[in-house]
Amino acid sequence: MDNKQINEALAILNAVTRDLEDAYIENGGEVTDTTAGIEQTLEALKQLLKDESVDSLGRWRKAKQDAMVTAKAEKAAADARIKSLQKTIDYIDGLANRVLVAIGVDKVKGSFYGFARYTSTKTTVNTEALDDAYLSKALIAARTAGLPEYIDIELKTTTTRLRDAGQEQFIDEAHTETVKFTKPRAIKEA
Image 1 (cartoon, rainbow, N blue to C red):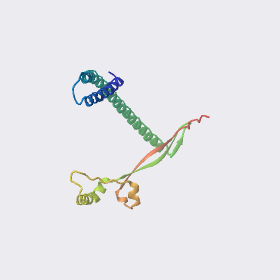
Image 2: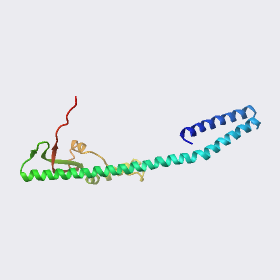
Image 3: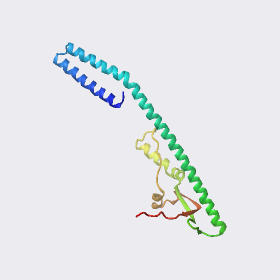
Image 4: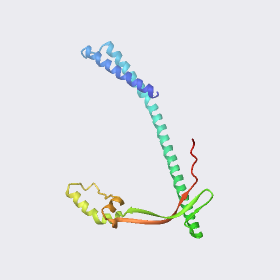
């Protein structure tokens, strides 16, 4: 049975069940030849669904589960490829920076491509220092307010919010010498 056939069988089963209930109501709950016939039809439909739909649904589900496993594996392979490409790009940028330093210039342009040296600054929240300063206070306040022991607390903020509050001591900065890369512009089609 396929999806359409299973849904059709379920619809018929529901209709036959209603017919059986109506027949019992009309007969005052007595078993008659009509109700017995409907009950046989009902049992046949149930048996059909039991025999035919379970394996069909199982095969369909297994196929989709296998497809999901394959998709996850393909995604993992694509992610690994992207990571590898990024590492290669980072290596090329580092090498270009070394070349610029060696030839004593900050910027160079070839026939098509160019590189310019600059210092990349990455700012991050020093979560360890933030936790040392405020986590125990937050935990005491939360427990006093009734937060149960089985719920943890995590302090989260951004470097922008810390700067705005004048809390620079919780910000770490990392400076890296690197390059900006320029390439020919794509031609716009009319």
